[in-house]
Image (cartoon, rainbow, N blue to C red; front, side, top):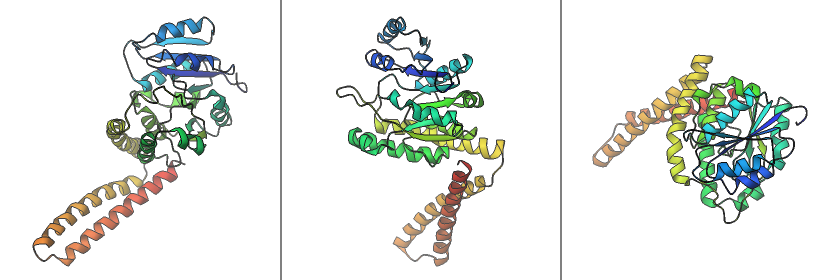
Length: 313
């Protein structure tokens, strides 16, 4: 236990027969239960975990019948931790890139009621992250963090794709997990869903373990962004409707609507005027109207984002 709280560790894993060994052998004694969720691995990982279970009775292997993705593995672990009566569920990957020495950073804010959900931010310790993270991955992380801030409404967080997290049992109960995305991109989607259900999210510092010679990620940055961007776009509108229309009305939806309506009209109309200018005279009144549309559109969008930021504090 940790400060009189029962702690469960959830490890979604797929084809991690090598790195699951150091991941599990470095679990501290403050962890009461370890759920390794095998997402239909095709390697020998399940047998490796079974061998480790004989040495550490805290480990429990849970096998999916079909591949669900890392988000699905986490949801499975959350539900088991809730069912078995654990106070906090911590999530790490099975690739030994998340240092459990940092565990108190995730647990203390939850125990002290400062947050419902804590997530790692490798850039609070900037020197380590910037030195070892590949440039392409760093750029992709920054782009995805920006998109996630807007989609989720949590503007005060960064490193949004980090999967090292902690969550209270009360928060697990509050969320309707049927709304959550199970595949890659789940960290952004989880944040969108958490905002809609009113969870308090806090960034906490954590160090990353970078293993020389081992793969650093299973996904390509550009491909990943292209895959999750439509999900975040849909999630953004889902969150607005869920939080600001269905659960409790807020006028910021009108500001978002006006911004998204006036800006495209202003751009299209402005391009039309630009083409007309190449072949002859243009109307000054139309130019003024286009400028007015764009100014009002951007003002409405910024007001909406500001209100969204304030509501999500």
